[in-house]
Image (tube, rainbow, N blue to C red; front, top):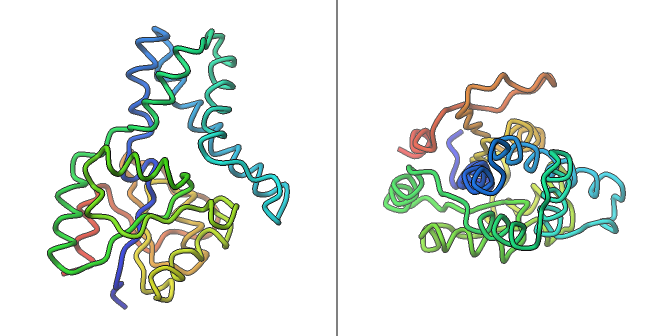
Length: 226
């Protein structure tokens, strides 16, 4: 069955979450890459913690707040003094993450082929709007779906359910694209047709489930919509 629309994860898939490492290296010489990696890991850990600790969303905190909290943890863990200026610089950089170079080409081609392409992300609505606009992709992505609407982060089923509800399609008719292995597995469990963009050649998650498809570039999306 060929998918009829596509939803992209944002952070890691359309936007390079580790691009903050360049600025982090300028601020903390010798620790930039480690800070970027730990920052991202702790950010995702916090999304899981607040979602799993209260199924009704009572412990939900906006993604921007969790991102800031994770930055503070990462800096302290690495023994780096994070003053107000450095924090503001890094958080602003996260708001304007680098877009992967093939994004525009692929999204424009999907538009020419009449394929609806949107985003389903852990990011807050304002974060997504700024990132998409900063990358010059605002006219190419609709809808921009944020889990804030359900106050549960991926991989909670309520988060993934936003896609079928917005597009008016069953999950199996939507191609869900993520570079995060855990996200691709979660979306597969939910029922999406999935494409894991394994850009860095990571091994698959060892949970007895693999994404429907795997690729290495966003250009692989085009094969689903001839």
